[in-house]
Image (cartoon, rainbow, N blue to C red; front, top):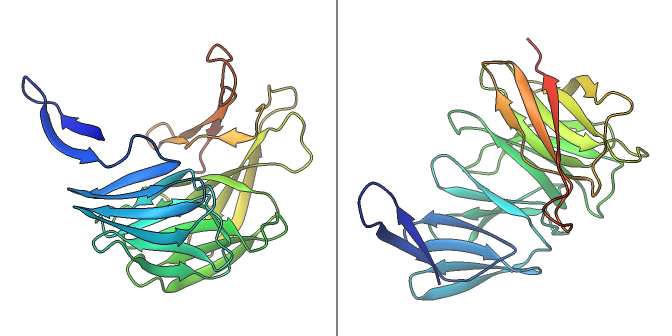
Length: 244
């Protein structure tokens, strides 16, 4: 098991233990409650009980809603629609329609809306869906379609009505990030920013979660180059201005 400890005293106090040494992706849903993904399947751990939640191909992380009730697996493929988990009971609360891949999730500051972007089954880059969803019920509040690409990350602007979605422009080599600005009221693209010509690209087309800095009105996108390479291989940081 992997122990989880909190600072604040000496020595550190054990507060929980994860029931696994490693996982493809995992999240703590509450004290003694975990969801873990292997490469091809999902499991809920609650106390002494382990429950299979079915097949899900290669998710890379889980996004848990601020109230702790819902967990969204990102980049996992399910031809029946992307599953969303109930964090209390460890069951699938609902599937999101039309999304074979739920690429990324951005949650509103209050947690009452989940903004999700992804592509439909079979996974292609021809149609990118954007959905505004009630995290509790799974009801789709609004829906939009975006230009082709594969969404790699999503950030919610807390001060303005924008979503920032980064992807890799098809045909770019070496791949360069493209930052799309989406109006979350209509889920339509309103602007796009590209890295300047000659900017170093991303070796493996993998992007990390952006660092959104509302005070600076900037977003920092990290291009991950050393996923499978030596740690000495540098990664690139791309800086984009946010819309007013």
